[in-house]
Length: 397
Length: 188
Image (cartoon, rainbow over all chains, first blue to last red; front, side, top):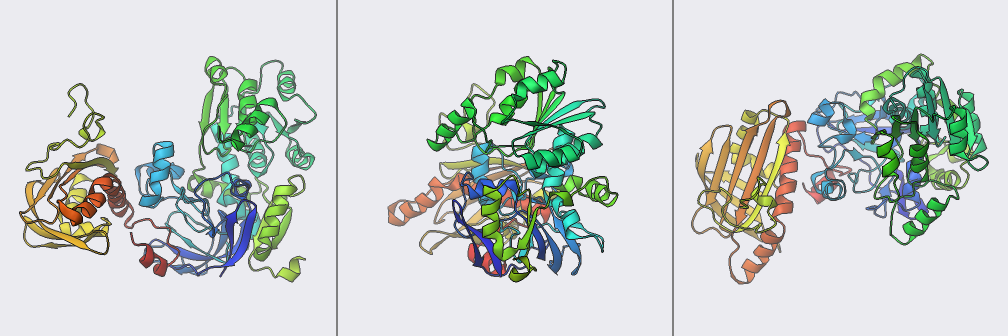
């Protein structure tokens, strides 16, 4: 089959790889009908994530049709499913508490060593996201083997288009969890750094959870427009001193909750960010982190910090003093996707959450290398690329 | 074992390879101790382990275990360069749902002993603590075997315990293999 494989920094290719099949009883295999390129795939593309190997198949946002089932899968051939990007067993202590991304058993035993050393305990497996997260082949492919198919994938009702539900795989529940972690109270003002897909879903979610005002921060005008479409007030950090603006807009109080949806590749020419870039390039520090610093500084006393953004290693100049003195609460983590799927599918069906607005480009799987380059180079216009393995190359041209 | 705190012996900075660690009839001084919590009742966890024929399903290095009688089993274990080592293991202690200990019989290629404790952890299931000791033989083969058993027993024990947990909790062992053929090549 054809699949998008990583070969190095800024080098992804369509490779011919062996077809997947059933290995364990709870597996299924799906024929991919839609798969998206995620902002966090750009971290792989840019070479920020360790333990990648040449030939690794990428992609953790995908859906498709069940074509093979193991003896203990509860799915049936022909069903359409969206697959969570987190690989979780559903039977361990953490899954019992719906902390699916903290699953004890999603990672193969040998792959747990790295995360255990780096983080203290291993986390769940992830599709197509390095060997530290399991070495599982991803969904930017014609077919994928899906472990624990009896508890992960959600069945999509007939007649509902892929584009409406595809983002259940990652970015919609991630944005929703980010807003939930902000513990929004009616009347709150919530500030969101980063108007990529996660930030934009966090904006929608925050309003649904009762936020009175949402202030969205980015520097791409197109993304700020999308945030404004959902009712957010916007700040362009290239034109505006964000802290000053936030303080004035909130009458000197600061936002009640702040959401960092930017992560380890924070852009912008801030002094600390430039120092971070120098350190990252000299291996003195791995994560560039302006957004979270600014968010902590702006957040009101006793407020909440929610951090859906992906961080992998160590940071310095984290404003621990401000964090402590102001008595802030931080909630973060990979998304417990399985926990949110039924509720969010309902919200989509009832029209409470808009998902399709995000898709700026649709292209065949075979154009994925071009898609990565576009997404990487043109973040203003390219908000989301969806790859369609079934689409013919000529039709997309 | 350190006398000044309550830490497990396997976490000691002073003498992590000190023999004993509560293993009756201890053979060997290369120890690996590790605890894992399994979300199943102690009776179930004990019963699975007590049937030694089950152990190769999650112990990567163990080729086969032939159970001879209630106390005696014959182990065949992978060694470097395509070799295997073998021994008879004798159960020395057996407390239902709580404890299994064994030691190798005289004439073992690699004298060894082990002790697996099962402690009820209420809603969290069962805490399984493994202490395994190896005594690699002298000579060239011994050196190869020592390399295998002395350098990596802690890693091996840790991974085996994770697989044991996965098997009992999920009914299968997680693998990134893309298909059955790749799984054959990768093994556990």
